[in-house]
Amino acid sequence: MRHAGRGDLVLGALAPDLARDTSLTGRAQALAATFERAGVPCVVSAAIEADLWCKLTINCVYNAISAVGDADYGRILAHGATCALVPSIVAECVAVARADGVALDEAALLQAALAVGTAMATQISSTAQDIRRGRRTEIDALNGYVAERGAALGVPALFHTGQTGIGAGMPGGRGLRLKHSDPMLLDDVAADFPDLTIVMAHPSFPWQEEALAVATHKANVFIDLSGWSPKYFPPQLVQYANTLLRDRILFGSDFPLITPDRWLKDFAEAGFKPEVQPGILKGNAMRLLGLPGAVTADEPAPHERD
Image (cartoon, rainbow, N blue to C red; front, side, top):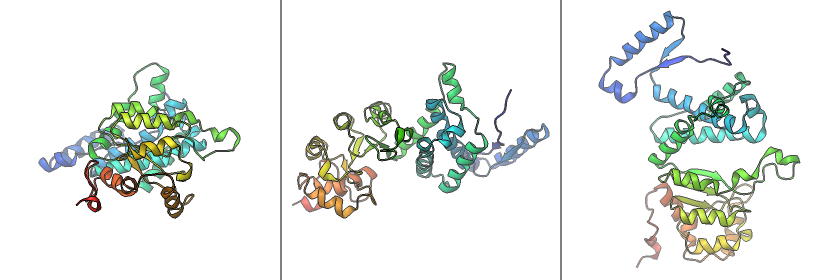
C-alpha cells in the first residue's frame, strides 16, 4: 500500500444534534482518545459542518479534474487552464456553504486547497482511479451534492460558454479546448438539476443557436450578455431577447475590458425593444436573485403599471 498523503481523522456533532444532546461532545472526545491510543491521529471539532464543507471543497477541486484529465494533482496545478479553475470551484462551494448557514473563509480555503495539491503532487484522485477500473464514481456525492444544495438553496450556477480570450492567439491556446464550452453540454445539467438556476455566460460564439435552444427548452436556464459589445451580438440573440427569452436575458459588461458606459451605449443601438430593456438591465436579475421589489416575468414593472 502506498500513501501519497494523510490527514487527521475529525469527529464532531452536527449543530442540530448537539443542541438536542450536549453529551455528544464528551462521547466524541472519548472516541477520539481511543483512536489516539491506537496510534491514529484524531481531533474533535466544535465546527464539524465547516470541516465537512472544507473537505468537500478540496475534493471538488481535484477529483473531477483529475478524473477527466487522468492527471495527478501536480499536473493540475502546473497547467494554466486547470489551475485557473481552482479559485472558481472554491468560490462556488463557499457560496453554497454560506447559503447553507456555514461561514467559510474563502481565501484560507483556497490556500488550503493549493497546499494539498502541492503536498500531494503525485496523487491521482479516487475518482480517476474508479474510471480507470470501470467503476461508478462518487462524483454525485461531491460536485453533484454542491449542485443539489445550490438548487435547494437558490444559489445560481454560472457557466462559461463559447469562445474565450484566455489563451487566444497563443501556441495551442494554452491548452484550452473550446469544445468544453459548448452550451449543449449544459442541457444534461439543466435536465438533471431542474431546480438549479443556470446562467450561461456570454454570447456563445460559435454556438449561439445551441445556447438559445437550451434556454428556450429549459426554463431554469438564463443567458448573460457579458464579454461582448452589443454591436457584435448575433442577430438571433437580439431576436430571442426581444421575444421568447425576454425574461431570461441578463446584463453583463465584462468590466474592465468593456466599461459599462460603452456597453450601455452600444446596447441602446443594438435593436433591443424599449419594453425589454429594463428587464435585461435589472429586472430579470432581481427576479433570478430573489431580491426585494422583483416582479414576475409576466407582471409589469412598477413604471409600466397604470
